[in-house]
Length: 140
Image (cartoon, rainbow, N blue to C red; front, top):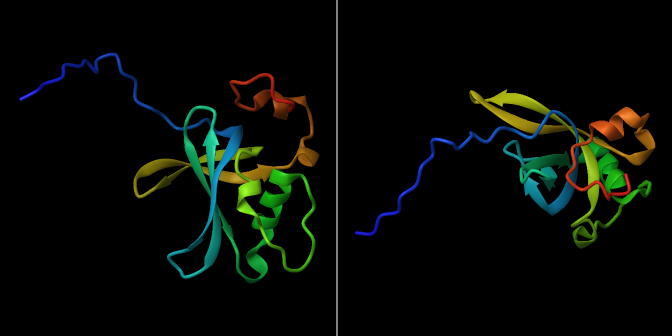
């Protein structure tokens, strides 16, 4: 029998990504049906600290407002009224800002996306200063 020795005494528990404004990268975009049977589009967003946030946008009826807002924040392009086709490949790797909050679900704390933030809605230097990033060379 092979054995590997290790020592976890100095290992810190991994927490959640910080609440507030975070810079994220779009990692994956795909369609999914919710447990209630609603069509939605899921954005997997990678934080700078290696967390994955799941941002769920409804894709039914009048519930597409968050999807529209998310696409506008990612692309910087106002989405037209009417039917559009989303090329998910064009979204992968894009950087955007999201507001993160912590929420308890089934007795476990989780990080969730409260909102996406388009560059137009940035009100001052405080928002930019509070953005969590390890790459200071980013243009925003």
